[in-house]
Length: 266
Image 1 (cartoon, rainbow, N blue to C red):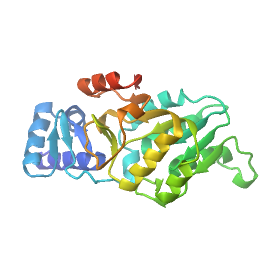
Image 2: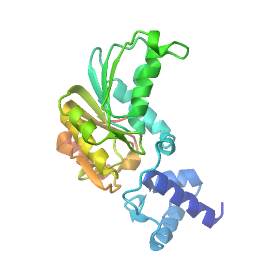
Image 3: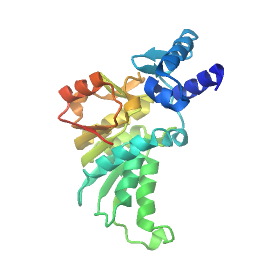
Image 4: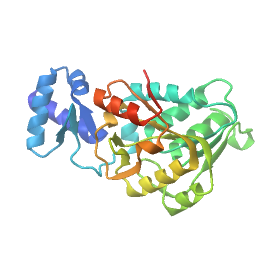
């Protein structure tokens, strides 16, 4: 791969995912970490990305890739996180899901397990709701004639690029509902907490957090260190974190000091 082709691929990865780590790029491109760091330095000088410790992040904090683009990113890590999260779900619980591809993977894992217990599901995510609707109907069944094993409540609201329903209607709905567990995805995470590039989604996520007895933050290691536009949860509001291997050591130690339980799913 020529140097210019390599840099274009690096830039593509950073822009689509919001950030990228040196080791991940090295494996992806089949070159040494030193080569990746040199490419990142040149791209940073051109103002095309911002170098951070261990990698780079997008220069545009408001960047929000389309949902379909994000679903295929870091799929193995999201699958491991989803399995660990699904293990927390018990019979007859009320479960909240924020928007995001990791939460969708959790919904797929929960609905894919044998003999699912009846759950009450509260979500502002269209894909999450669709996973539960589809599992109830089955591939060939008529949804209108099928007995639902789960109760699914959608908040209503305006749709965002991440297929979230947000805005005053969603926030008002969440104001009087409560769930046992909330699985909370994030565009980015850092010392200050969880963030998103979408202001309206941040407000609705805050309402989701207030509705939950236990808040479980779910994000893969590539989300750490990205600077999102709007914060929606600080670490004092998070009870459990489920993330993936590859998180910087200092980030893991930081969260272990702040949070009761940190799970590295693999």
